[in-house]
Image (cartoon, rainbow over all chains, first blue to last red; front, side, top):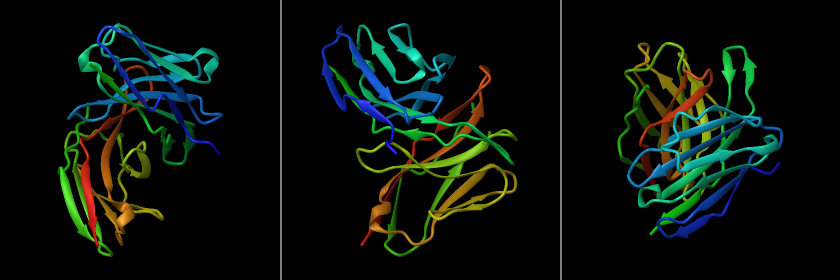
Length: 119
Length: 113
């Protein structure tokens, strides 16, 4: 079974440019999440899709960030225009939410991340 | 949101048990504790999770205190391949009606030969 894949692995852009990150979740996973870690900080939640719908986008930093998941398969995260503070590692994760005895179990499978550098 | 605190780094001798602590004193009653680890250039990988009871799987054990304000991840026989950053995470119920992970800053574990 293929894991979560992300493209590109690295991206270096200039301030003011646009970058689009892509995430391909594990096949059959309805839940897709975006996270990021900026320098020196912890990994932070950005947003959560259930299929093609945005379930929670409370972590999106501002309106320069736009996430889409057309058709409920892969997802893109666009940053436009990029600023210096957007530099960091962007992770995507997917999960199948299962309801088991003790509650809802939703192990998230993470991709390797995209390292974004804005100069 | 619940917040976790972890030591920045730890060393452990190969073959010995690695005990990684996590403080989550503001955790709510229905919030789970998850542990993930990140090996260089890979994404975080699931290890174990729990609510109240101690848990064990093929990778590790999770000990949660009775008051649930702290927990310890135990790698019983650490190997060099266990060198990684270990994240203690609280899974919270968001206002949107779904769960999300709140990551700690992570502990960089170095297993020494």
